[in-house]
Amino acid sequence: MAARRKSKPVLVALSVIVVVGSIAAGVSRLRKVQAAVNPPTARARKGEFAVIVVCRGELSVKRSVQLVAPVNVPDLKIVWLAPPGGAIQSGQPVVRFDPSSAQQQLDEKNAALRQAQATLDQAVAQARITAEQDKLDLANARYTVERARLEASKQAIVSAIQGEESKVDLGSAEMKLKVEQATVDLHKASDEARIASVTRQRDKAQAEVDLAKERLAQMEMRAPLNGVVIYQMNNSQGWMNRQPFKVGDHVWSGAPVAVIPDLTTIRMEGRLDEVDRGRVVAGDEVRVHVDAFPEETLAAKVMAVSPLTLVTFGEWPPIRSFHVYAEIRKPDARLRPDMNGSMDVVTARIPNAISVPGKAIFTRNGKPITYVAQKDGSYRAVDVEIVARNPDEVAVRGIAENSVVSLADLSQERKQL
Image 1 (spheres, rainbow, N blue to C red):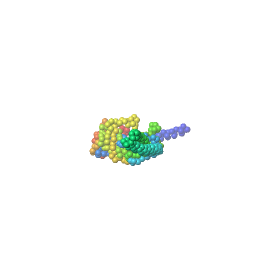
Image 2 (cartoon, rainbow, N blue to C red; image 1 turned 90 degrees about the vertical axis):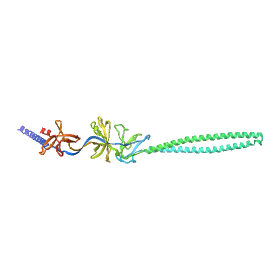
Image 3 (cartoon, one colour; image 1 turned 120 degrees about the vertical axis):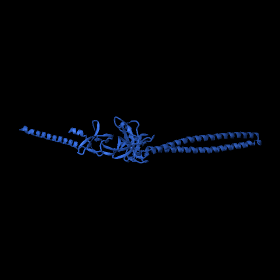
Image 4 (spheres, helix red, strand yellow; image 1 turned 60 degrees about the vertical axis):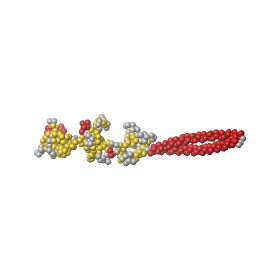
């Protein structure tokens, strides 16, 4: 009796499992029957059919300006940055460096310039004093010569001894005049050389002051055009620890700190398969779709196609493909470089074409067919001719406008039944 009581729950559980399995199988079979009888459908549309080539890519700009840290400016430390990714106007500050070191250098150079200027002024004043004294001494020497010449002219009315003395005095005076003239020339050349030397020192000090002022002016980097700020990577801590420049970072001379793209030159850069390269030419119409704004369709035009394949390192292994560039006619202010998206390049237009979804085309005996709904609710396989094919839509011949076509392969559904 105990064994029979224990076996009853087991039998009940097995019965429940069998019933549930039968119900599930019945539901699945019912769904297949319903799918075969009422498959998903779509209507054939008549109108212009745009033959497109679809390619993925990202937004880029044709023109951008790189902001580079000042050259030959030591101890550059960032103390302020404009918000990354934010819009900025031409002339607005982007990066500010710590100016304390440059200001200290400027003060030191200004002090050296003032000292050099004072030395120059002293040398010029001393040269003027020396020149005035030499002028006086030269005038006295000339006076002495003239006086001695006058005494020598009295030779006819004085004694011979006095006449000879007068000649000697005249010769001595003339000799002193020549010596004085040579002294004046020596003083003039010496003063000019000293003034030139001090002037060079002053000019050097002035050049160093100008350089210090220029360095101080470079402590602030301003935007050369309207756009957005994108900061470059700081690799000073190694490739693995690199990150965009931030406040507090030390910047080496000539380092690329930021890039400002010109958003008026934004474009879509797509990767084109080799089989589609010959179908796309410059001037083709393009419909751009940006992943960040799926509801927007931007009108564009193909500007150029790369003549050779280019390597894309964004994936591994690297991909070699042709690149196609499409200029967006009216760029949205929200667009930013490196946004992902796709582009539909319109390579041809077929007027009054009958088009159906790509899912409505099937193959039977190697030929394309579609299942067209009949008045009695059944479906008939109709041979069609493929005129053009897009990823999601196909232009065909062989069916009428507004025909209801099945999106499911009814031959497979019937086999399963």
